[in-house]
Length: 354
Image (cartoon, rainbow, N blue to C red; front, side, top):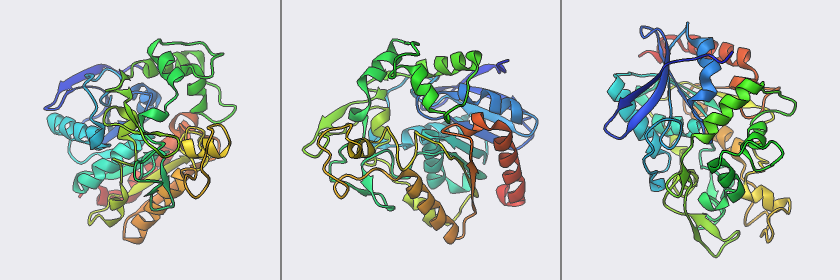
């Protein structure tokens, strides 16, 4: 049975936000931020499992779900969404929430905490976007592969997948259609029930498509693979040209952090089949210039490096590994995720309420 929550809307100074709400408003606020090619519908079961413990808010981000489809200025990077959240929280009167972000949403949550650390009780990261965006960097400190940030942004997204999203293709035999991509969110062998599959596919098809949304525009550059980030849309907003979250480690106020990591994650990893550097190394993209010029993006290693520096500088950081999960441990191992989240928040006690 798919749990149902009333779809609500609120007009903020930036845009009209669609959101779901559950739980007791007198309890700790918990905000669940979804990732790319999804919406708050991917949190329905999580909300049901936690509704007795928190006041839960799950918004649809700009470009996704039922939130107003306004253009995405990629030059703002993740701030296009974190500033939307800021306006959303202020409009609702929501103060110092616990923030949980999944995938791209994890990057948005980190950006919010970077800009407003005193207004965050705790940070939960579910297989988050690397602190240096998606593709195009080398080493643990996120050094760009080249000055044009080639191989990142909207130009690297599979055009057949985009067309199939736009046309709402549900053909399970097509590797570039949403059902096949949805399957890659989860660990090998994980079975999605037909009703949940339909819910998740509906969620994916709500995403805005085009140069102002997904995947965005791109520019030609001389460096392999000869495309670089443009200035519009989702793919570019995740480019390292516009994303750098390394300042988290230096924050004077450090909200406690828990990192929920699926051991079989194929979407955010050091060997990711969506990363142009790894695809080049495997020979799927011709002309790869080699390990020194364009290595695979070590996304997980970069995240761990940043969070260890965060801890070394006085912050609280816990890593929880999900041995049976891929990119969606909150779905694949829900009972463990719920227990980890509740235990972590209980463990930080009053430090999360000051």
